[in-house]
Length: 355
Image (tube, rainbow, N blue to C red; front, side, top):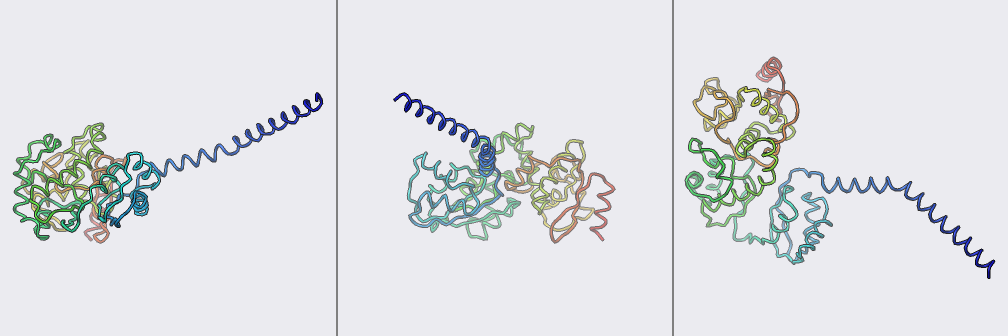
């Protein structure tokens, strides 16, 4: 028995040492693999998705899994699995009715879940899409065209009706602005009842603005910018820039000019003062007497000149780094601009464009 016990001990010890050596080998050779895999997964789940707003059709009797797969397929979320887990943890196991829901990449999982739970009845609503950069007058004209409200009623309500949103209390004196709520009627897709009043439609738009801007409010505060300053800058970017990659460059120009006290001299602000939309300004236009005219007045115009979308709001807060001070249109077809850090280059580029 003693020999058997000794032999058993030797064998067990040998097996244990072999297992330990195999474990050490595994740890040394595969730790980096699993670490990198986990890091890549984390990057996939936390990285920013391209800006996207879309109206999804939800089939009758859809489950949370169906909704999650739909959102992932459309590029609204990165992980259907994590969306399902959060939904289940919050007790959401509903079966969804046939529906259409407007969602975007800026919405949190909570907001997405809530959007699907709202169950809009499309048959009783008119779907309208307000484009980024539309002015209050543009929106009013479009809503009248769609047969919802008279343009005059909409403009009057935006300037005279009372809307109880906390963020409106922090606006400066708006009595000198052309449209009191310019910049704050968030461009998006809305479900509007056929009998909706102008006030009800405006309330929807202000509510959406509040929802979107709350994402960026802390960042604006940290950078020493008021909400109104952010929206004014964003509105200028929206009206000046057509090419997405140029937004942060235009923001850089605006911020750099403000920092050194140089007039912005943005054509879009003069066009807003004129109430017109055309490709080129005349020299006489630059003499327009208006607090919106950034050729005549330093600093920002008295108010926003359009209703900016989320991409331009983000660009207003996050200008690219550099010493750019000028930009000029380079191609009317593509909307591309030439950016420069000195006046001589700017003049040369403008001459090329005019030729």
